[in-house]
Length: 287
Image (cartoon, rainbow, N blue to C red):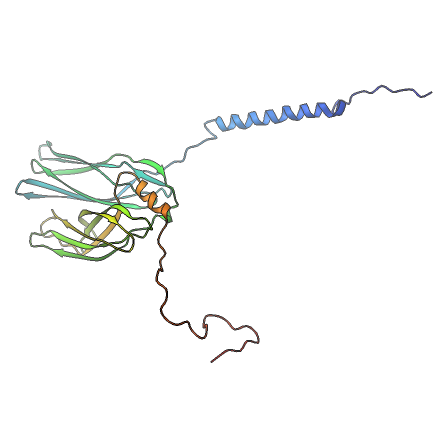
């Protein structure tokens, strides 16, 4: 007679592997809890550390005018962050006389500084007295991720620049600015920086151009005034950028795409022999 052996559950598998399923569920729950705990800890999530804007150079000049004293300034800000716009930047220009009394104060909102790029700027204000010292302070930028990579933000080509010194010591600067994008640029600001023979920044000015369409570059005209007596400009740097304290106009242009470099079909007949291609074995080559 066959003796029936009672079925004893294995301490690992149990009936139909139920213990293993529970063990796996418990293990997965513990792992998920550990991951959530690690991600929620301050050490696990670290914000991106963005570099502050750097003032590369600046200059200010004061000249006597018929209505008082004119304070002129120019500078260059750099953005070392390749993925973010520096927005809502404000330059505060403060001038004090020999007694320390404030004779001029002006807040100048600056245009957005593009990712990994620079921002030349210039301005002018009228002082109630002659400033003995002029300082320029900057409000820290707010940061916004760019919609495209830095290389997608093409520069606006500037051509035909002419710099003409006037009798009163000011400089008249003219030229043309083009739009490399498929969409029209509603408003651009053109900044001109003047440098002497040693390369030192001596002054600057700006002008605006509107509705810049691709293929029809408009002309810009601007004047740089308030240079020190005897100052001579040996080199002119002209840069055009989108106007506004945010980078949205630049983003919109970059998202629309750039125009192709070559838009005109060649007019010459094709070469009878392709001189840039190596002949295949056994192929007859015309001389």
